[in-house]
Length: 433
Ligand SMILES: *Cc1c(COP(=O)(O)O)cnc(C)c1O
Image (cartoon, rainbow, N blue to C red; front, side, top):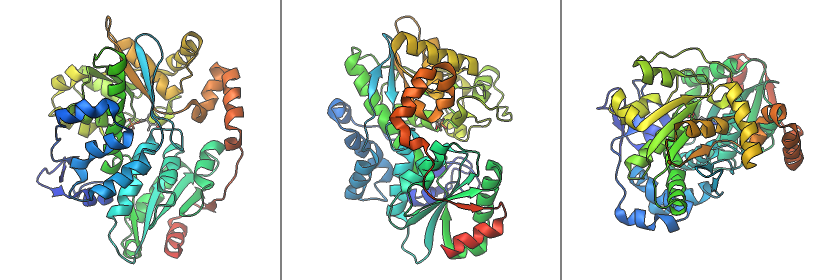
């Protein structure tokens, strides 16, 4: 399979090029040239398949020109080595828990697969390969753990000094080996600017192969399809073979795009719901037909604080850029901070299920959109341990229990470099690595 640019569709590249470039030369996103349909035989076997087996069948058509079957098998076994269970919350609503990976967030799936893909595809040269990432907290941990001890690749994560939680800091600084954490004296924007400067520095790139691991990378997007296959199969076993309505808490819209691609490959889903926080560009678009991005608003579901979702062009393209077609299959709903808190409280008291703020948008979004006797599931994108400040505010006793359970993770440990926010220091560091 080859991958096309969403801008100039005549520009097609190999998987390897799409993964290492991230964006096409015209600045657009890459998309698979076609979306293959899975066989009836696959769907018959699906209920009995393990996650790595599902991943192998689903991903094979996308990677078969670049990887051998053995390579793919090894990659999916090491990526999908934690459970992704479907659990009932109440009579109508189930939850697919995506947070059982090493950093307790769904981004572990994409980061782990991407790291293994890069390690396999990376051309043999004597240049050192460095994945350079700026993080405001969450992505850095997933990328650091995803690439931990992956041969031939070093990771440098820049984060704003003193502006992330000890819990998040530990996820990046306590690994060592090929993972290098740098606390930058400045804000997240400074970290991003430094990364951009490095990417634009020809002299540096002559010496060091720098690459990125951000969320528009196809190597992160494609593996996110896999858990929807298992989630839907389990759901249909438990609910009389009715396809579910599926709700995805959305920020950059990568996770829901993966779900829609899975559906195009044949996965039965009744409808999709994209639940966002008050960063509501997509809901406004579906109402007015005008795509009008606004500045980002800070919310309790802060991993979804996105004013202009980077994967939106992919999702829109899946519906031929036709709003009416899209609206038949995808609804959007907006959940504000007050509703997030209420939902966490209510679902805990009625169903004894503790939601994190992101998953709370998923639960409420789904319960609003289910009609009559419809049933479905939402995906839970993070464990509440990652957002304890909010749990503290609504259910302090539960927050305390989690703090005890995860105790050690809250004590600062590990090592990091500190750096002022000038590019020359970063460059010197990268050249000396
Ligand atoms: C990144 C993230 C999201 C949003 O996922 P997208 O693919 O960007 O829509 C939701 N919840 C959590 C916890 C996240 O980290």
